[in-house]
Length: 571
Image (cartoon, rainbow, N blue to C red; front, side, top):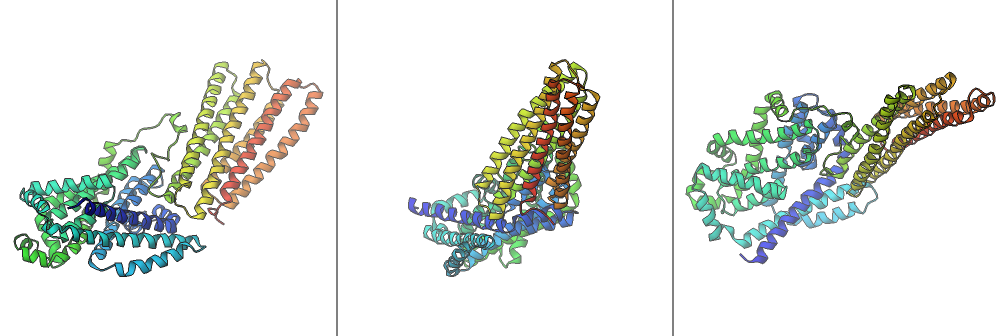
């Protein structure tokens, strides 16, 4: 085999993998938000979760995208672990559609329709509608996929694997190890899938080797079984930086596939023969009669996807009744641990990197933004405690905590902002880009709220250094302003969660009350200072606090405007 033929084979495989990626991303860009809503809503029980996982995976043509998305949902608290396990089971069924698509590409001359479809794809991509552009990307991806399959088949024919003595000798030697042979190819399938991070690519290689007559069907199916284990690595990597529930969901994916492989190994020959019988292929006869194997080689491209489907369906039918025991098992491996208070102010939902598609990364960023806003509201709660503290040691302790959280708030802004900018660099629809820009504005304004909280704490600290206190009326007015400010923060958190205009209007009403109170207190302060109720310096500290609360209210309104000014708002 020349190096040129080998490079052509690798190039064809790369084209296939790129086609799968573009096709999947195009589908997810068309239906990403809807799929997120479906995955979050249609998981009320094990059956709906199973169907949802199968539907979403079949729609986006990527079990990896579905499992990573599911792990993210668990990390964000939108799915329970039990719901996630049922979704992942469904994803294993949905991913079998990919094998059938590839089987069609191998058994029919797709080259006759690929190039005309490229014309359709380019027309859609250059249309003004973002939905049509995404549809064009899907068409291009599908064309690249079939073109990759066609060139793979052509290159395999050039390599003449069925008569390549070196290849035949390897499979002949390893094929007589009995059960050890099955384990060897199982391990090879897992390692290959982990390396290329694409079970579709390994499935294509397996189909080529089997249909050429080089690889016996039993070893080929062992490779397919190894792919099922290798593909679980991605979700476990994605969950490695998540919380314990996310790691449990990823581990459940591995447990599901490993268990399936184990019970299949117990009845391996029987199950494979039964599957082969469904498509009219006699595996036993093919192993002894070379002429029969050669004349029926085309059937092997149907045997492999049939086995893949039967394996996953049977595995689901067995394990769907054991979701609770699986949940208990993985929870023992990764027990839930309560975070300390400092850790609660750090990133929680954004994990180790961008998800498999940028469209689906928005969920993590949105949850992290809401978490950030909730923590700034708690930071304001510390300021309220500071205002009423008379013990000097307790005051210093609270002030140090607020100062520390202000630094953490700055770090969170940078991390979330960098994450959103990385997402913005991905393949996004125009609507999604508008959402991300609005979220970038939100994170900046929320950080400014944290700055205001620290400015308030500094004003109280400066007042304490003067060894003087506010009079009762000042304390009452500050408490009244704090009450309105805290109400505006709580209302902002509600708007961030719902995106409803009605909630946004309530935020504007509270802001109006804050502005009116500040105006009133500013006028009253001049009168009180001139009447000698307190000195000018205490009046300055007093108005610094009032003005900072009004400024904080402005930041709140800016967050609300950014949230409700996007396509995410609901009437």
